[in-house]
Length: 193
Image (cartoon, rainbow, N blue to C red):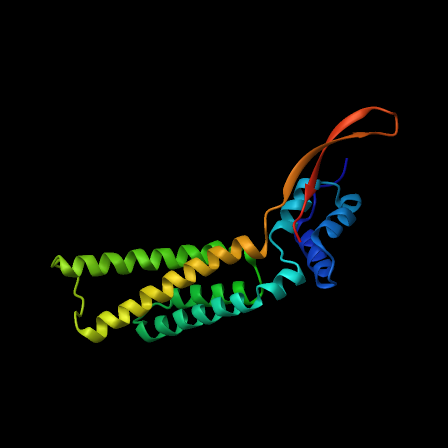
């Protein structure tokens, strides 16, 4: 029986093989004899985009990077005290810049949470809530519209990229004959490159 897989070294191994231009299917087949656990290898490969996919979606990824940078700039301009949103923005910029696709969901979550908070602020200001004050000037409404559009665009692009840059692998059950002549069922993972 093999020792448990060191997932960090597995990911490093996958990254180095991806950077040489290998396909996910080829890497998967190469790593099975080394690590043995097919599903662990497949799941680790799932969230690392190939060079081909990085190049194909490079413009969209850069657009997302620009949108996140604009969000960080807006947060910086509106920051009163604690820089938590700015720290979060910095982390998300890192995630996009280094294609940490398994964390793109956090971009979507951050944009969705901000959209929800801004919507609550706007609704409460128009219902004359006691503790909420919202400047209803034209400039303020235009500014909020731009922020809402920025957040919505960021959410949609990050969701789309998450699905396109790293498509899910497919599992197939395949019958094979072992060295003793016995027919056995094994699960094969197929990657779309």
